[in-house]
Amino acid sequence: MAHEIDILITYAEKDNETSKKNELGWVSQFKKFLELMIYQVEGQKSNIVIKSEYDDFTASTMDNVAVMVTILSKEFASSGRCLDTVESYYKATSGSKINRVFKVLKSPLTAQEQPPRLRDLLGYDMYQLDNETGLMKEYSDFFSQDAEKQYWMKMVDLVYDIHETLIVLKGQTKAEVKNLFKRRTIFLAETGHDLSIQRNIIRRELQRHGYVVLPSQILPTRAEELERVVRKELEECNLSIHLIGAAYGEIPEGADRSSVDIQNKLAAEHTVIKRSRKEEFSRLIWIAPNLRNASDKQKAFIDTLRRDIEAQEGAEILQNPLEDFKNIMREELLSAQNKTVDQPSQGKTIYLVHDKIDHQQVLPLVDVIQKSGFNVVFPAFEGDLMEVRKKHIDNLKNFDGAIIYKGKVNDQWVRMKVLDLLKAPGFGRSKPIQGKAIVSEASLDSYKNQNVTLISGDSNKSVESVKMFLQEFKS
Image 1 (cartoon, rainbow, N blue to C red):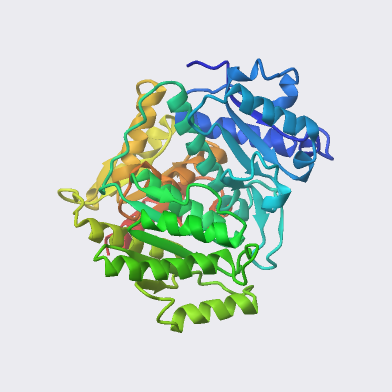
Image 2 (tube, rainbow, N blue to C red):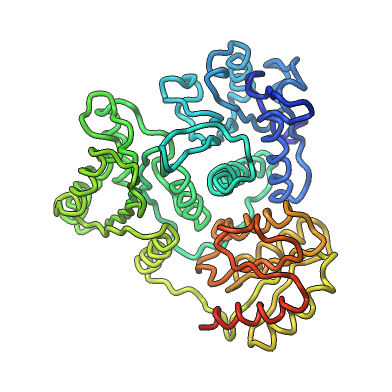
């Protein structure tokens, strides 16, 4: 069914106010970024509007809206107008069998502070977590280093979830993602607030490979109900993954330990039950390397995890960088499936990411790459938007290393390409990226801490620097 409006963003007016003239408010910035990223994924422009542009929406006209995004804050939760809008949309779409409402949290809210209608939806936390102090605040600088790691990664999650819903609503066939594994069900335990981003990254990667990830909804806040739901979900799973950070996590009503702790305890019990039935079940526990802000209670919980044989029942415990943990997780899944992944027939491949306008400028680099013994793949520049995007996604699945070339393009173009590399597992990529570099004729300062090699675009230096990068890559 075609809808007049693809995405309606509803929010409290105060959340879009700004103190500076000609400055976009928070919601207007969000809309701008959402339009850009949806375009990247869909390959065509979507009709995205904010509620203030269409204040005459009623239940009778809401059926023209495919998807609603709610910008949740304390102001939103206390606004009768906002809650009425949400209620009108639910009434208009009551026959829909898929979720069409997406909950974006502009500021932190407990479950009890959220409107009951939205409480059980998975949330996309768009506020800033200060790892030094543990405090949370709203973003004002959307291009800071923290925003790169938190705000933008949540935007990636949101965009792909909306994209999948729009595909279903438009009656299209879901874009086929290469399924490297047999379909399994995995329990990805809820975490403390400090690891919600990391959990979403792993959830996204598992789903893109065809796994069913549980729990599918936010866990209940009462201990008895939480335990019942977790036990039921674990019964369907072959593997549970637990991410342990500095935050102890919320303690459910009627319990004396956090939901993170309870989920781990129940998974340990479930391992024994499964083994008694000679059924497969294993656990992976990841402990964050940085625990400076951990409370005494959390430190005690982690110490118990490390030494308590019962708590570790059937578990592998790791404390390493998240990327290393994800690689081990992939190996665990591959091993469990007893399935090998096809390897390239010969030579490693470098994806030379650049814009058509810079194609002549990258030709010297092509020569260096090929003479160094690597295959080179390029973006597509001909064909319609969907064909160009498909070629880009195919390249993201299969390359060994990537070089992004910034010539006449702007910084935002480069940021989107760096984000695409981060999203590569989401397109069906199974192997880690072995090397990433940015070659830029302009200043490289803004790309520091991107986990990439920075190479000056100066014609006298870039060729030699690329040679050195490739030599390190080879070794």
